[in-house]
Length: 439
Image 1 (cartoon, rainbow, N blue to C red):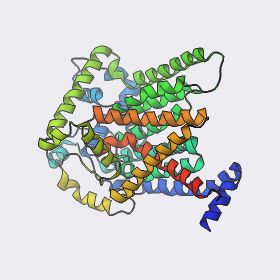
Image 2 (cartoon, rainbow, N blue to C red; image 1 turned 60 degrees about the horizontal axis):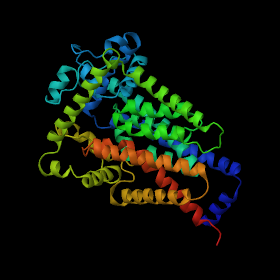
Image 3 (cartoon, helix red, strand yellow; image 1 turned 135 degrees about the vertical axis):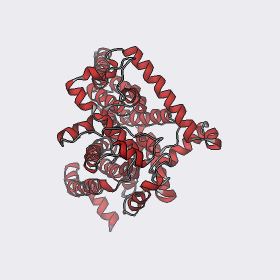
Image 4 (cartoon, rainbow, N blue to C red; image 1 turned 180 degrees about the horizontal axis):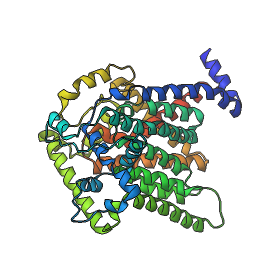
């Protein structure tokens, strides 16, 4: 009976099928979005949220006195170090939310060497309303990410693929935990989702590919890996043209122009001494990474972490299997333990995890990629282009994380979550079409 219903559904013309599909899909999306906003206050606190809320004060400076954000060797501003280290998009968005709500930024940065009580006395623990607004801002980006993942999935495999991919993203365990905190992960997810959709349309709208790639990079530097894929997307033109090389040149200029303008506008720390500021940024990031490696990966773990195969295994496990990682170091485990227990008790916060759920999604991911390569052999240049661009984006991003970010921290795999939603959805759509095939 079910097979007969699905068969009749697939036999409908595309317009009627899409209309029949629209209402239940919208209903499910609405429920997922309600779930996203329903319990943001119950998410265990992470001290990095304090840092983002502390740095959100840069938004007002960007509007009124952007010159104060410029890096100089003698700049006494304690926030100057974070401007060298962290991508700016999240702190500006959180600052916008606090400004609209007429709330101040957190007055002091979190000090990891101090106790929870000492940080509280220093003003580093955010007020409840300030933290809530910060989380509302970041959580608001998730439905937009769902939309762009839906559009990307639809371009690859139709409305069913897009619908499943978007729902998978909204219910992904990593998104529910790390994406709803007042941190950088939600903006990163949004930027990457927009970039993937922009890459598919890069041959017609190169500015869109540049916009997505630039926002992803300005959400977190690890997304720089998508920059060359964006460039490829704007010069990969499948439609015939008499002036294809001229068009490619124009596309490159549009892509690079949008990318550079956004980067320069969002990073005023470069305005005064750009070369010296970039050098200082690189040195500070390398110093931070070295300290994190020494502090977080002692002994045997630190030695084995140097293996590329081990990094790949840990990345895959964090993406699909390992339960929620509420913190990277255990300094404040006792203060957040009760929050973590309450969070885990909520049905839906661990969907698709573990060896069964995560293993199934991983298998569907591999199946989706293999089915995509099989279809890419057909003489359909549009699908082949879209599929290979998304696949290459995934490969470049995974390689960047494995090589550049040798830390086994769960939230660092967030850039790969869209692919872990799109490929399983694509596989499910293909399996459905095979299942209902006559005979």
